[in-house]
Image 1 (tube, one colour):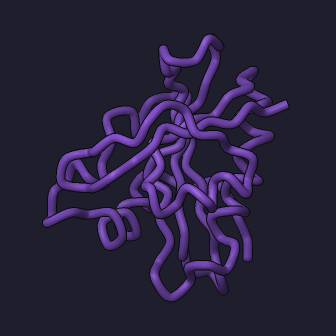
Image 2: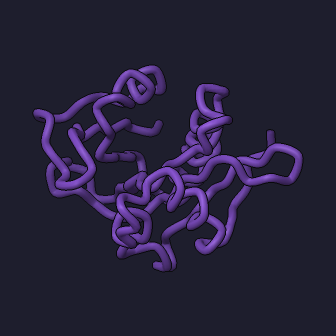
Length: 145
Protein backbone atom coordinates (compact mmCIF):
# COMPACT_ATOMS: atom_id res chain seq x y z
CA UNK A 1 0.00 0.00 0.00
CA UNK A 2 1.18 3.49 -0.85
CA UNK A 3 -0.53 6.66 0.44
CA UNK A 4 0.07 9.92 -1.37
CA UNK A 5 -1.55 13.23 -2.22
CA UNK A 6 -3.95 13.09 -5.12
CA UNK A 7 -5.89 15.57 -7.22
CA UNK A 8 -9.48 16.36 -6.30
CA UNK A 9 -10.83 14.78 -9.48
CA UNK A 10 -9.14 11.51 -8.53
CA UNK A 11 -11.44 11.27 -5.49
CA UNK A 12 -14.69 11.40 -7.43
CA UNK A 13 -14.91 7.84 -8.80
CA UNK A 14 -14.49 6.24 -5.36
CA UNK A 15 -16.57 8.86 -3.58
CA UNK A 16 -19.37 8.43 -6.11
CA UNK A 17 -19.38 4.62 -5.86
CA UNK A 18 -19.17 4.54 -2.04
CA UNK A 19 -20.83 7.77 -0.89
CA UNK A 20 -23.01 8.70 -3.88
CA UNK A 21 -26.60 8.61 -2.75
CA UNK A 22 -29.06 8.16 -5.65
CA UNK A 23 -26.67 9.94 -8.01
CA UNK A 24 -26.84 13.06 -5.85
CA UNK A 25 -23.67 15.08 -6.58
CA UNK A 26 -23.79 16.79 -3.17
CA UNK A 27 -23.16 13.41 -1.54
CA UNK A 28 -19.69 13.16 -3.08
CA UNK A 29 -18.73 16.72 -4.17
CA UNK A 30 -18.11 19.14 -1.33
CA UNK A 31 -18.09 22.93 -1.10
CA UNK A 32 -14.43 23.40 -0.10
CA UNK A 33 -13.01 20.66 -2.34
CA UNK A 34 -10.82 23.04 -4.31
CA UNK A 35 -9.82 25.51 -1.60
CA UNK A 36 -6.08 26.21 -1.31
CA UNK A 37 -5.84 24.72 2.22
CA UNK A 38 -7.69 21.53 1.25
CA UNK A 39 -5.73 18.38 0.53
CA UNK A 40 -6.74 14.95 -0.71
CA UNK A 41 -5.02 11.63 -0.01
CA UNK A 42 -5.31 8.32 -1.77
CA UNK A 43 -4.24 4.79 -0.90
CA UNK A 44 -2.96 2.67 -3.78
CA UNK A 45 -2.51 -1.05 -4.31
CA UNK A 46 -0.46 -1.95 -7.38
CA UNK A 47 -1.04 1.56 -8.81
CA UNK A 48 -4.81 1.26 -8.32
CA UNK A 49 -6.54 3.87 -6.18
CA UNK A 50 -8.64 2.00 -3.61
CA UNK A 51 -9.29 4.51 -0.81
CA UNK A 52 -9.57 8.32 -0.54
CA UNK A 53 -9.97 11.01 2.11
CA UNK A 54 -10.20 14.78 1.96
CA UNK A 55 -9.13 17.31 4.59
CA UNK A 56 -10.44 20.88 4.83
CA UNK A 57 -9.25 23.85 6.87
CA UNK A 58 -12.66 24.37 8.42
CA UNK A 59 -13.00 25.39 12.07
CA UNK A 60 -16.05 24.01 13.84
CA UNK A 61 -17.37 26.63 16.30
CA UNK A 62 -18.21 23.88 18.80
CA UNK A 63 -14.49 23.51 19.58
CA UNK A 64 -12.54 26.23 21.36
CA UNK A 65 -9.50 25.90 19.09
CA UNK A 66 -8.88 28.33 16.24
CA UNK A 67 -7.08 26.17 13.70
CA UNK A 68 -8.87 22.95 12.79
CA UNK A 69 -9.20 20.57 9.90
CA UNK A 70 -12.32 18.67 8.93
CA UNK A 71 -12.16 15.15 7.50
CA UNK A 72 -14.81 14.47 4.88
CA UNK A 73 -15.35 12.09 1.99
CA UNK A 74 -13.34 9.16 3.33
CA UNK A 75 -14.26 6.16 1.22
CA UNK A 76 -12.77 2.75 0.44
CA UNK A 77 -13.80 0.41 -2.34
CA UNK A 78 -15.82 -2.46 -0.89
CA UNK A 79 -13.36 -5.24 -1.72
CA UNK A 80 -10.57 -3.37 0.14
CA UNK A 81 -12.42 -2.50 3.36
CA UNK A 82 -11.19 -3.58 6.79
CA UNK A 83 -7.60 -3.83 5.55
CA UNK A 84 -6.22 -0.66 7.15
CA UNK A 85 -6.45 1.76 4.23
CA UNK A 86 -8.51 4.41 6.04
CA UNK A 87 -6.25 4.14 9.08
CA UNK A 88 -3.19 4.74 6.90
CA UNK A 89 -4.82 7.73 5.19
CA UNK A 90 -5.37 9.29 8.60
CA UNK A 91 -1.87 8.42 9.84
CA UNK A 92 -0.42 10.25 6.82
CA UNK A 93 -2.82 13.18 7.29
CA UNK A 94 -2.09 13.86 10.98
CA UNK A 95 1.47 15.21 10.48
CA UNK A 96 0.36 17.26 7.45
CA UNK A 97 -2.36 18.87 9.54
CA UNK A 98 0.08 19.51 12.39
CA UNK A 99 2.55 21.02 9.90
CA UNK A 100 -0.24 23.44 8.90
CA UNK A 101 -0.29 24.70 12.51
CA UNK A 102 -3.50 22.89 13.37
CA UNK A 103 -3.93 20.57 16.31
CA UNK A 104 -7.51 19.38 15.98
CA UNK A 105 -9.28 17.29 13.37
CA UNK A 106 -13.02 16.65 13.38
CA UNK A 107 -15.58 14.82 11.30
CA UNK A 108 -19.23 13.89 11.13
CA UNK A 109 -18.81 10.13 11.42
CA UNK A 110 -21.39 7.60 10.39
CA UNK A 111 -22.58 5.75 13.50
CA UNK A 112 -21.34 2.42 12.15
CA UNK A 113 -17.81 3.91 11.86
CA UNK A 114 -17.68 5.21 15.44
CA UNK A 115 -15.58 2.33 16.81
CA UNK A 116 -13.08 2.76 13.95
CA UNK A 117 -12.51 6.41 14.86
CA UNK A 118 -12.31 5.65 18.57
CA UNK A 119 -9.48 3.16 17.90
CA UNK A 120 -7.58 6.05 16.28
CA UNK A 121 -8.02 8.32 19.29
CA UNK A 122 -11.11 10.25 18.22
CA UNK A 123 -13.71 11.18 20.83
CA UNK A 124 -17.44 11.72 20.44
CA UNK A 125 -18.86 15.19 20.93
CA UNK A 126 -22.54 15.67 21.72
CA UNK A 127 -25.38 13.40 20.62
CA UNK A 128 -26.10 11.53 17.42
CA UNK A 129 -27.84 13.41 14.62
CA UNK A 130 -29.38 12.63 11.27
CA UNK A 131 -27.97 13.81 7.93
CA UNK A 132 -30.96 13.67 5.64
CA UNK A 133 -30.73 10.99 3.00
CA UNK A 134 -27.46 9.62 4.41
CA UNK A 135 -28.16 8.43 7.96
CA UNK A 136 -27.19 8.73 11.61
CA UNK A 137 -23.90 10.49 12.43
CA UNK A 138 -21.95 11.73 15.41
CA UNK A 139 -19.49 14.61 15.65
CA UNK A 140 -16.06 13.22 16.50
CA UNK A 141 -12.72 14.91 17.04
CA UNK A 142 -9.10 14.24 17.86
CA UNK A 143 -6.41 16.56 19.11
CA UNK A 144 -3.12 16.22 17.27
CA UNK A 145 -0.03 16.75 19.41
